[in-house]
Length: 381
Image (tube, rainbow, N blue to C red; front, side, top):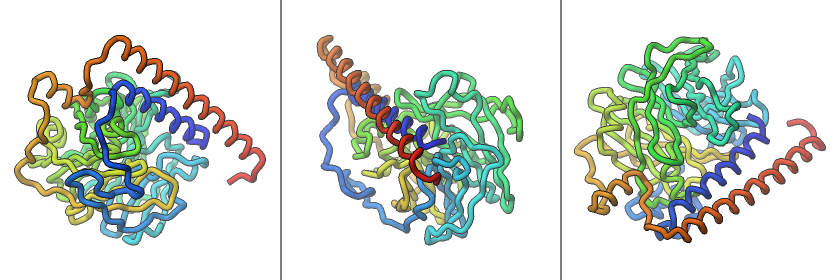
């Protein structure tokens, strides 16, 4: 993914977010943003602890797992496609080695590790605002067994058209499960409808196994209420007894008593851990002992590795207090509760969102033009 593509992606995210914010109406009152990630700006939130800082050469980390010797991470973009790699770190976040892809990885967004040490890289990003011709016909999982030098691609296809996704978890049998990133509505949960096949052009079909709708928690994050709705990462506890999904704002954990992560997510009650003020939180992992949640933001390096206390298995936490009217409860579950608006208010919001979107797109075009001119007049990286 080139620098121009990255710039377009970030400006498009702002445009989509602007529409979400305007359509959602006034945001609830929030504490003043904290200058550092992980600060307990949300009542009841536990401040994050900085474990270490990843090497500055490993920018835009989008997926993370903890291993016996340290950490493994993937990045989703770089000006040089050859710099999109799998990174291995020691326990002090020092880079020890990297592994490249045998062909260009399009948009790696998450990472999972099986009990036997096999790594699965989820090359599943597909920006929602790509032109129809540029949307992905297949997504990919790269498999890297212990000791292997080169990952092997396994392509998959959605049953209902392209989706952008950034979260990968494994079920009790080690089968990868993808959770999509949806700015509107519920996230889709997809599982392979058959055995994964290496190096196929058509890809193994996926089936839609369920949905998950994050809550409106009010946790401060760089996208406001829109950031509470988007699933950006997933993780399995080392013993397989818990599974976690995260948004830009919060982490959700479920007990998995029988290895069925889809059933746990779709029928269980999650325990929520606020992850306030992370610059662009897209990664989550469990520590090796399962007592902590680890996160890192998709940002220019050096990026800090943050640690939060993980919740423990046991009786499900009681839901937070909310509206009792059936309609209001449904709106809260969908993350779209809002006060009724008059036609005039609706027209004003639509116009304002459109104007803001055009302004952001114009700014993006200018910035990209400047970036191209700058690179033409400077040595290649």
